[in-house]
Amino acid sequence: MAKKKMPVGIDQFDKIRQQDFYYVDKTGMIKELLENWGEVNLFTRPRRFGKSLNMSMLRCFFEIDTDRSLFDGLMISGETELCENYMGQFPVISITLKQVTGNTFSAAEKNLRNEIRRAARRFPFLLKSDKLDDQDMEDLNHLRSGTGLIDDSLAVLSDLLYKHYGKKVIILIDEYDAPLQRAYQKGYYDAMVDLIRQIFGYALKSSESLYFSVLTGVMRISKESIFSGLNNTKLYTLLDEKCDEWFGFTDEEVRELLADNGLNEYYEIIKNWYDGYRVGESNIYCPWDVINYCEQLLTDSDSRPRNYWANVSENSIIRTFAEQADSITRDEIGSLMEGRTVSKQLVQELTYRDMTNNIENIWSILFMTGYLTQRMRNEEGVYELCVPNCEVQDIFRGQIDDWFREKVLDDTDGTKTFYAALDSGDAESLEDCLNYFLGASVSYMDGGTLDDKEKFYHGLLLGLMLSRKGWEIKSNREAGNGRSDITAFQLRTKDAIIIEIKYSREETDLPADAQEALDQINRMQYDCYFEMRRPRTLRHFGIAFCKKLCRVLVE
Image (cartoon, rainbow, N blue to C red; front, side, top):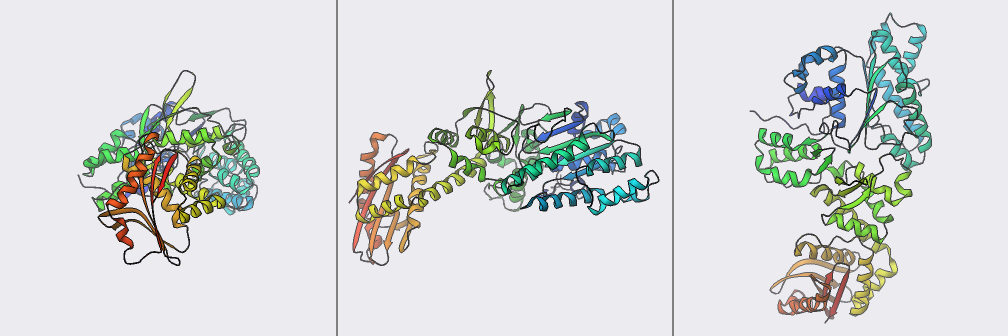
């Protein structure tokens, strides 16, 4: 079959179908949603898991005067009776709160008004409706101009559509919790919570014009703050089996996508990098990553997997986690980085305030936002959490490394002592500094190959030394009969340093491995690197690391 375009960044169902983009069929969600009917349905999934596309698909299926051909050949088209009864039978209000943000409450409220105004303008025929009276027309004009009260605006629009069509309304609200995150960051959280609560209360609670509604978001905000009084809510979270396969790609869907595009040979790479999420009873891939990487492969078959998710998700939570963590929690993060699991209770109903007032809550936030997934649950309700795949591990590693280096460099007294020990060749003082720095770090040095472990320590030392002004720092430069790990040259004083790094399997091996590092500098004649520069002093440092300890020898 002819290869179709990958729908990178396209979350409009009708555009994907009309312009012949590749579509992974999720229309079975419609049947399951109707069979498990609820008046208010909330789906929580991490960012870029196909929430907006599914909401667009629901709108295209249910709304009056829909293009029925959009669903030709798809899963739902085989449900003849269901399509006759539901396809194109309802007025649909569809809004997204993704862009309802701002540095102030008034700015965010204005963006929310604009979103509802756009929704109202999708129904210009209401202006000529003979079913609406003068008061209705006044309300409609307020909606279309973005003026008047906002708290009952969705409910008013729903009532107007119900009057016009004589049919109850379906309301779709995408990314319902996006305004709350920004509000918390900018200090107007209480005002935004109150506004969202009022809008939802008017539109979704005991409304005669509502048939049903679907909401999506990342977090399940506690009922006390947002869904107060909404006792009719059906929840579909990452832990629920119902509808577990409709957001994200299943393994079968990924295999089919790769086969259709002649990319079967990349299956294992894609699985290692972008699979690993456990949703209900299904194993799920992040669709954003799979689509992006497949598009890249269709252009360049030698492309390596990339971290696509990091650019669209809020990664500062990992740094917040590392900053708040005590030594026990940092060791737990280290276990996750090494591919192991940690056992934790999950709290599914949280407010944004709960994120940082208790370090244990951040485990639940990391789970809901997609940085962690679960492997099993014991009889006490405790979950085994782990990092889902290589991509997320890469995000963790980058964020934690950046945080750690900043933390070390901010410690002025510690870095001054470190630099002074380098300059004077004081092995004991240098060893104390490095052990102090390592003690404050997140330990994940046990995982990977010997080369991977040495690279971590190499990067740590290189980061510390690159911050020095007046020094020329080089890494892995050809010298003598090999490549020295780190070389440093002071341009003014002409002092020179050569550092060789080793990783010790056991703590008892540290002295011997540090000596081997020194011997390697001499054996491989790394001094030749400085032969033409005639340094005033030239010191050799052999440094061996084992987890959070090191041994330094100087010559």
